[in-house]
Length: 117
Image 1 (cartoon, rainbow, N blue to C red):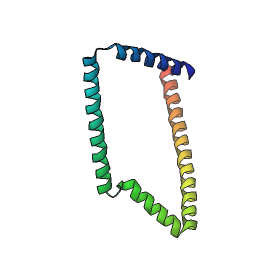
Image 2 (image 1 turned 120 degrees about the horizontal axis):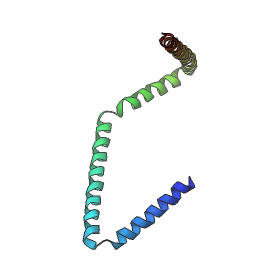
Image 3 (image 1 turned 180 degrees about the vertical axis):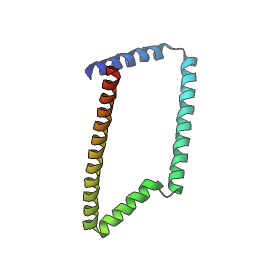
Image 4 (image 1 turned 45 degrees about the horizontal axis):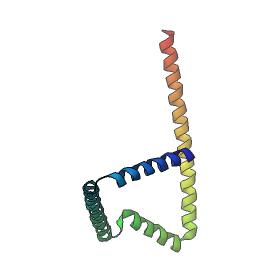
C-alpha cells in the first residue's frame, strides 16, 4: 500500500544520491554491463520470437484457432459442450470434496485409535 510506495520512493532517492555520487568510471562500468544485458535480452527475445513463428505459433495458438473455427461452424454444439464440461467439473469438485472429507475422517479415526492405546 502507501507504506510500500513510501519505502520504494525513499530507496529510489537514496540510490539516486549514491549513483550521482559514484565516480564516473564506476558508473561507466555499470552502464556497460547494463548495455550488454539489454543486448542479451534483445537477442533472446528475437530468438524466441523466431522460434515461435517457425513453429506456427505454438500449440495454444493452434488449439485456439481450432476452438474458434468449431465455434463459428457449430455454435450450438459449442454451448452444449461447455455446459457439459461445467457439469462434469462440478461433479469432479464434489468428488474431491468428498475424498478430502473421507481422508480427514480417516485421520481423525486414526488419531483417536492412537490416543486410546
